Length: 135
Image (cartoon, rainbow, N blue to C red):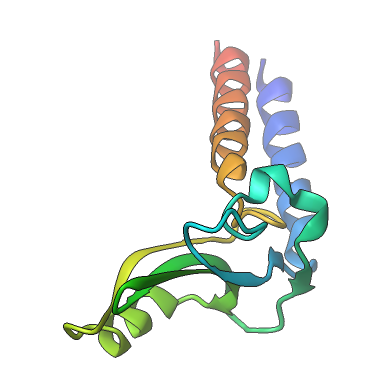
């Protein structure tokens, strides 16, 4: 029983160590919303979207939407971890404002909508394995 716990913890630790030396990779695009662009409908155009390796110390993949008058732009890119706060301060007028800002760093290309479910699913599986091994 104790061996299973140590094995599970050891595997999780090894995976985190192996992943820590890896740079984060994020989708990178921008487009005006409402025109069916690849950046807007990323799940339908995964192969059409460019992606880049992040070189920031506290890198996150970001997905944010900014309203410029009547136009709304969507952005996906690699940013520093405080990007949402910085954007909210910069774009906070009657003419332009941040409508949405999300960040993630749990895996490559996590700034695509379907990745959120996959990350949650993996976390649930790990918790179930841990709970099963603890009985």
